[in-house]
Length: 412
Image (cartoon, rainbow, N blue to C red):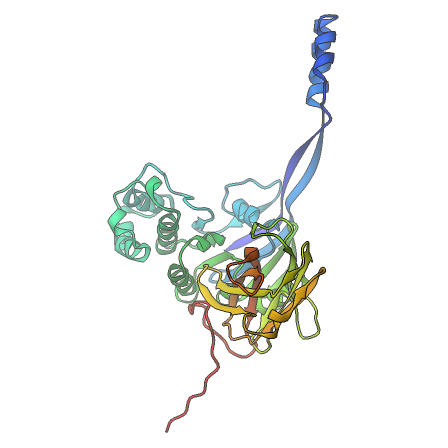
């Protein structure tokens, strides 16, 4: 179904060096010999150009059989999106080839495949025609597409007026319902709301298991990859670092990636007596971990710099799911921590029971002073991202990230 052989994509990056010329030199020399000066000074002004080869994808080989769902994971800049653009024909490869056996639909970027001047209705028929479907075949699927996307009210509006969420909903509905042999999806689903993401994941599961179609799925949501895909590719600097069963590849990726997040360039607010330098998720042995399992407590290590001593500090932490919905809130208010005086650089450890269901989460951190929530010394939104994996409880992927409360049931 998909066969990738020695695939590579190279870019030539140009660097500019030098190029400073004083105005006095220009005025003095231009009158002496204007013609030779002009030629010489153009080089001097523009500086020296050097070129560097950058391989976004290199020596990539893999095959995907009919009916398989294969995940592609990796850090930002690993080459995932470039690989998908090559597979869908948007970008030509520098080396190798990608053989796609069957009709291919893709969802890579918001609005991809849509003509902005056409209405939602017209774009549905337009995309169906590209996939080789007859008008009769498209009409048969039309109501399902509209219902799934939830854009019936705006069907006859040009898609250039759609929001990014509406664009994604319609684009996915079109790609999933017009029965391509191969469906390629990038992280663009993150644009949609939580309910629609669950619908999409359920539909993709149906496409592979029931309809026997092939899916390539790029995501930073490890739980979605884990539940949907039997196999997984880990990309690192454009090359396949590991390839195999999804659980093995994800475990390797999470364990090999340090989870200390540097906050030197973070957007922050507050009076600035204290500055959070970094946050780490650590295990009971104080080692960096990328993912916390739900059998152990959540332990976070906060490293800070102090500029002015602060009295009676309050640490507030908001926990949010990846969609930005608040999950829980913790605070040191009312504890012995209020009796502290922070005078020098150091670290703060905060620990809490892990009742989070599997999924991806983020933290907001605020440090207050003088026993008052009104005195904000440091605040960082989206300060830290982390993952919770399941070692005991299997949470279905269609359950939105939320609190998982251990419970017991019995018949009386």
